Length: 93
Image (cartoon, rainbow, N blue to C red; front, side, top):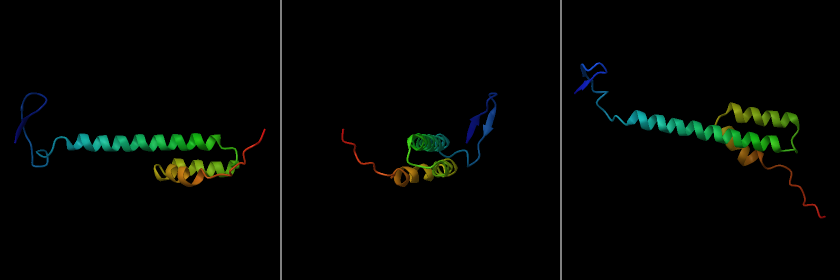
């Protein structure tokens, strides 16, 4: 297949370049969405972690390290398991 280069000249494309042109765009989109999901999960988990008052500083630091060092799985594990803290009895007033 023959294409045109940036300077207007003819450019011969090999078999690898003749395939689906949209594949790189779709690939970039998937990775971009994965990055956004990872960042949102980490932010939600860290905000929840900072607001908790029932954890010691060591426990909070370990959870924060897990959330930050294991990009997608860390926040998911924290949000599924780590959120289960002490259930406080409702106060009657």
